[in-house]
Amino acid sequence: MRQFLRVAWIVMRKDLTVEVRSREILYTTVFFAASCVLVFAFALVREGQPMEDAAAGILWIAIAFAGTLALGRTFERERQTETLRALMLAPSDRPAIYVGKLFGILILLGVVEMVLVPLVGLLFNASFGASPLWLVLLLVAGTLGFASVGTLFAAMLVRARSRDVLLPVLLYPITIPIIIAGVRGTVALLQTVPDEPMARFWVALLVFFDAVFVTLALWTFEPLMTE
Image (cartoon, rainbow, N blue to C red; front, top):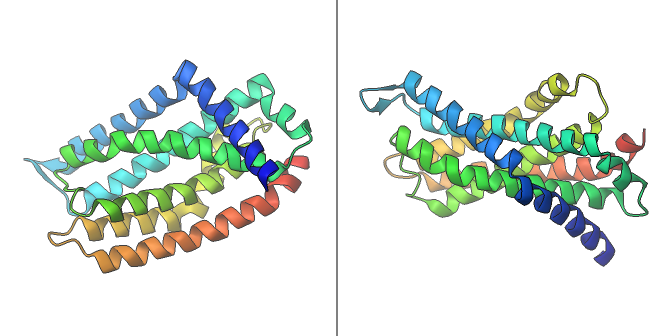
């Protein structure tokens, strides 16, 4: 177990070190997500009044789009430098490599969400601060489920010629339940009186999805990458 965690830590630290030096993916992802939110704000806000439940939907759509872009760019960089091939040839647990990549993506998306949440709150007049604990739990659980599937597919498609097209085609149908749960849970928190029991239900559902998706990804990562 210690060796497993050590490999995962090394892979995650490598990804974050490269990103801190270049900031390429972070800047690109934040700019793209912020642009999406701004465009939706012009379309869905009239005289300062947004459409009902629009803030929750836009927040999770922006997270999904930003996550797809981050996954694609991260593994494109691995393909160009042949880093992923080198990691797979190393005498280490393949699932540990997956966990390291997954946590690198999670931290990157966490930074993006720290920009997105106040931006959506400002443009859509949404009070995300009423139940901050449940909002954080929703974001963490939803992002983990989305990233766990996305990391697996992005790694699997890294050598495919049409990977940029195939990644969203494969990723979105499977992660739709996660995005819906995230939206409905966020809507419950944005009520005049936050509906915390309903938010708790959606968080529990997201945790269930996380357990299923992470288990399947850990189980299938090595055979998929080997083939």
